[in-house]
Structures are given as structure tokens and as C-alpha cells.
Length: 216
Image (cartoon, rainbow, N blue to C red; front, side, top):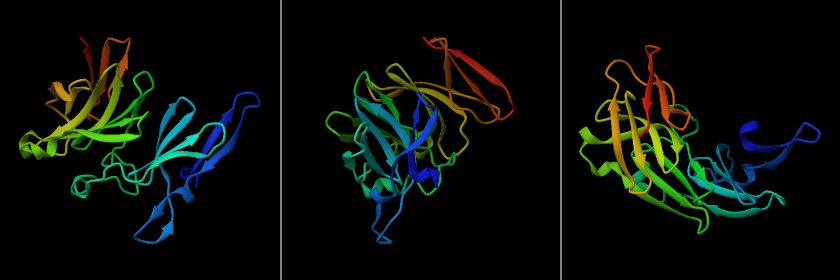
């Protein structure tokens, strides 16, 4: 199963080779058996390769030795929060997991469902810095697709009682708040936000319309 293994590509001989299998690093308490798959390869920080495996576990491997440098068994921690999540055994559009690693500031960012998590890559600590479950249901954000741009996350989301992702917005990482939003009136947004030219962001809706917005 390729989802349970990490591979590295050798640029010299143009060959893929297995780097590490994550199955043995994941423990399911309910079944008391080892299983696991890679939800996301988050990225490289210094000589470390960080991954999210099977639901809420983060694990970091040494690039050179393949040994485990550190682990976070459950970055969610609060069991009350898990009822709002859908990080299950698949990674469909309804189970978004999209960490963004910023090597320059030493953080990885996750804006998903109703929450914003920040992983400090130096201290290995995860914090929830925004929680929209505290808002009224009509104003509650449900983030689905995201793109990191400078100190902001450009996002696609639904809002209120609908699950239709028809909002484009900007989440400011410095103040941990949504600072801009635009509702698409007809159809839903089917693409992730794409930034090009360091000045524009594009999205595509379910009616095959493309929207172009200028970033200020």
C-alpha cells in the first residue's frame, strides 16, 4: 500500500527508493493492532520530514538516518473537538487535511473545519488559535480548501447551515482572524484557491466559471 510508505527520489540515478514505512509507528487503541497510512506529507524543516498519519498523529523523521525525531500522538487533544471533525479513513473533500509548512517562520498551519491549528516546529507544540464553534451556527465557518500566501491563508469555505463551499476568504495568521470574505452567489467553488503572479487569486465554480481577484 503506497499510502503507508514514504519514498525518496534519487536525482542522480532517477530511481525511487523506499524511505520508511509508517505502519509500525501507528497504534490503534480500539483494535489493539498496528495500522496506519499517510494523511499528508507536511514538508521538510531543516533535516526533518514531518507527516500526519492516520487521523491526528504527527510524526517527524530524520532525513538522513530515517529515525523518528519526535511524535505528537494526538494534535487535537480535546475530545470535544473531534465531534466536529471528519478526519477519517479517507481524504475526500469532506475530510480536508491540508497543513502548510512555512520554513521561514518555523510553523506549520492548518485551517480546517471550524479551527485553526498552529504547529511550532521548534518547540513541537500544537495550539488551537481560532475556534469558530463558539460562534452562532449562522456565522460558523467550515473551511475546506486552503492556500498559504505570505502571512495569510486564502481559503474556500461554507458558512452557516449549508455545506456548500461558496465563500472565498482570507485568514490573517498574525491576528488569527478572517479579514476578508466574498460569497459566490451561483454554484459552489470546486477548486482550491490558486495564487499567481504574487498579486492574483483564482477559483473555479461548479458552473465552470473562473473568478479572478486581485490581492491587495
